[in-house]
Length: 225
Image (cartoon, rainbow, N blue to C red; front, side, top):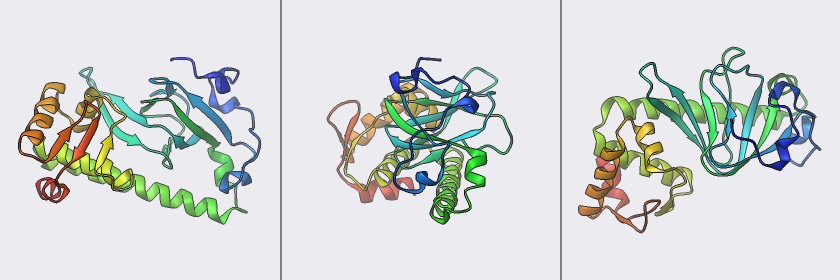
């Protein structure tokens, strides 16, 4: 994996051995095992097959979660934005990999500490809330892949990013187009062609490959429905 930025350079790669960080304000202050971490662009946070024991709350940046398919292709199952929590597993092994799309800041929490944090009602509520949001995103993503054509998938993706970033009509996409393709189950060429089609029919304006102006969100919503 790539080396994390200096704040974590001295920490062991095995997150089970991460040393406690100073307590901070908010629900995290109830957890002596919370560890702030920084990762550079494309750095690996955890890998498929590694021992799981920590969950993560994203403070800034964007994280992609992916799985390598038997035929060698990569399927991105989620993009996590600030405030999201990720890394939950049903057993003690990670079944996906997580990487920083751009430089990220996050807080790692030892799972056993979260389970025993009975004094923090706010933290338990946040965990449940974030878990339910994650399940909803997973359900929406499965529907996206199973029922929509390429143009509808891209329209739905742009609306999803708009909603999750605060209903902005100008999107600064952190992820490159090949990441979007792997998230939508499409080829890079198809994603580029669908962006061009949305532009041609007047639904978006492309200021650059990453900056997208949504000119008619209502029509995009109708297309993605």
